[in-house]
Length: 134
Image 1 (cartoon, rainbow, N blue to C red):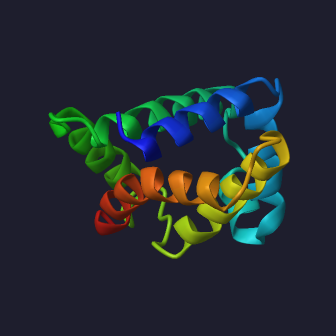
Image 2: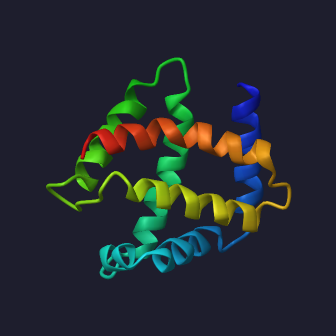
Image 3: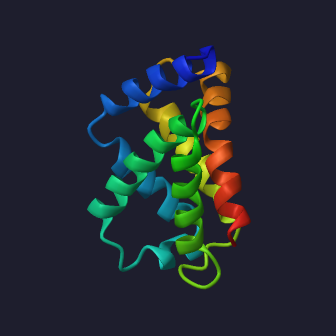
């Protein structure tokens, strides 16, 4: 495990100590943009939070020595979010990341530039794969 992985894992564990971490993220995200609010209007948010948890775990797998399952996972999710299904434009991922980092800052009392960089590093691989599926 690299230092970046360790910083991310430790921060994520601190975030999970906040029982409303995922709720806060979706509140931040949905309130940040009218299009996002429209996209989530009829969404089962409990299922959505479970999917986000799974995706965060798969992001770690992208950094493993055998990332093929994680790559396939993000390609599949990218197609679901693509133009032909949920129609999530690539630029929406920047807002998603911004809102997630805002939530991490709210929930992780040790949030600093290194924590932010670790989250960005871990998330960028999955985000790029999903954006390319649009």
